[in-house]
Amino acid sequence: MKPILLGVCAAFFFAFTFILNRSMELLGGNWLWSASLRYFFMVPLLVIMVVARKKMRTMFAVMKEQPLQWLWWSFIGFGLFYAPLCFAAAYSPGWLTAGTWQITIISGSLLVPFFYETIQTKNGAIKVRGKIPYKGLVMSLMILLGIVLMQVERATSLSVSDMLLGFMPVLLASFAYPLGNRKMMEVCDGRLDAYERVLGMTIASLPLWIVLSVYAWMTDGLPSSNQLTQSFLVALCSGVIATVLFFKATDLVRGDMSKLGAVEATQSIAVLFTLAGEVLFLSMSLPSVISWVGIAFVIIGMILHSYVSRSPQSFSLQNKNKSIIKKA
Image (cartoon, rainbow, N blue to C red; front, side, top):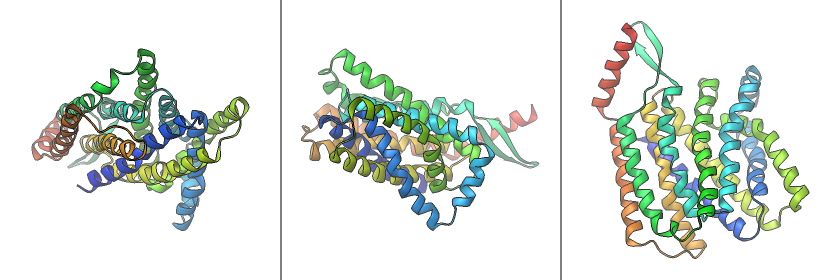
């Protein structure tokens, strides 16, 4: 239950991304600055935390072992995750971006066969290629159905081009984030905690943010003071607090793809927090009856997904499959 609670808390702080990015876009901020500034602000914040824990030397030692892996998977997990989200905010309201982002629930489940699970046997631990958790996937589809219901009425008011420009980048981000996160967990192999891993990935992704910020400066000038302030809030709430909470939750279930899928599914709650935030701070109208039905589907789907992932029956079935694979 602890990983699930951490995931929900991460979703609350992650909602600041969609609300503040949309706010910056409405005020004329360049999405390139919105993307870059978040990670520039994250570096000193995370350095303070890691230095206070006396873990900087350990983090750099692990990074030096496989520098290309750090650069590549940080580019995937942070670069191809956040830059597309900021781009989508320029064409879609925050609620639609947050709703589309929940495709990551399905994306995370579909990525399972690309990873190995650690299995404990009588002869010791072995690694077996993961299988798509179909029970959890059904619950994920229920969550996704709820999100579709929440968006259906408002989506009809957008043009086709805005829908595509708001959808395709987020679809890319939905695969990039869990892929980069899981690959970096494999690279770190439990030697770094969430704070150190987030700082390491942030540092490794800096080349991308420097290139994007230079391009933004050459084409649009320096960011406004308002964009600087809101980007700092995004960095603190979403970049540091939410990311660390989420990474800590995934670390707790590292090696169990079924539980990992349940933790990743908690991010669906972010759309509810985003909806509430836009109503309170951006004067968005209250949800319709259909939208509230969608919210109910999301909550029920979350509960069922968590239950299925912890079901003793599902674990016994997994052990049976693992025994068969071992004999083969």
